[in-house]
Image 1 (cartoon, rainbow, N blue to C red):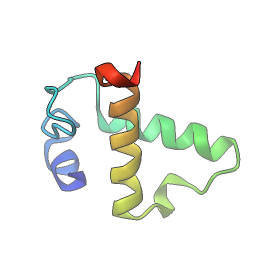
Image 2 (cartoon, helix red, strand yellow):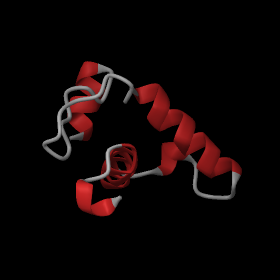
Image 3 (cartoon, one colour):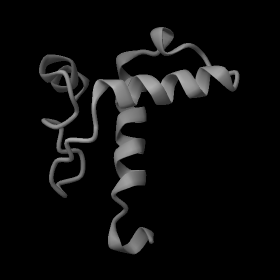
Image 4 (cartoon, rainbow, N blue to C red):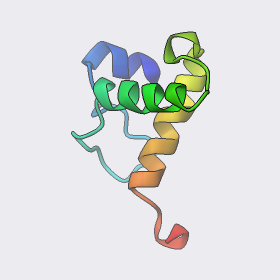
Length: 71
């Protein structure tokens, strides 16, 4: 999934949950959230593994688009 993000320059191509894509999910959003986390003492975004970046992307998507049972 992170390969799709990097290749397309956005998260639009990565339909994480089968609920459709969202053009608001960009590399910039992932970067901004990573920087906010870094400012609160978490590791720098540049030090994340691909798996960690993917989990952050999925978490952001699921937060913004909760399933009906998650609300």
